[in-house]
Image 1 (tube, rainbow, N blue to C red):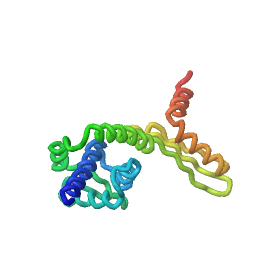
Image 2 (cartoon, one colour):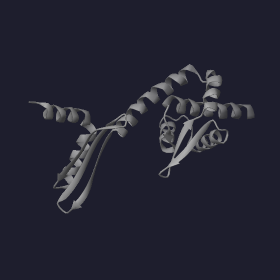
Image 3 (spheres, helix red, strand yellow):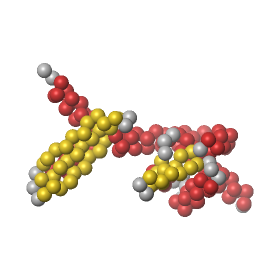
Image 4 (cartoon, rainbow, N blue to C red):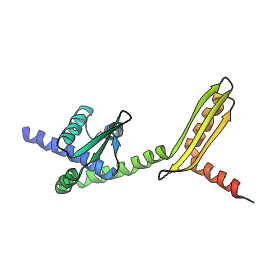
Length: 176
């Protein structure tokens, strides 16, 4: 029984190392938790224990910024993963790859397109719309609208159609 538990422990730690390696960018505790829990790779309490164990053994490192912890695989973790990766089944690796690619696209979209609004007074709302690509702001547009409803509609449309809207704005501005 102990061997099974030890194998399971090692297996789950390898999964976490694989996830952090393949995302190749620092991930927040929330992002990793969401990824692991959505696909039932392990339960929450085990996940938190494994994450802590990997930090203690310097397989991953974490840093704190604005009260958020970010995790990244270390060189030691990469070497360990490379050495023991064959212990993960091909089916599991394929599933992880599929899930990682899908999640990367979702997170990339979330970080590149932003929209929010603030109330200035009873009949005035400022809507801020932004598209960022590779840390370069492509557009940062502020609009003044008269209602909460308009502000919400604009934000929602921007989230869903920002690339198309951005392209249309550029085309309108460069037409002669």
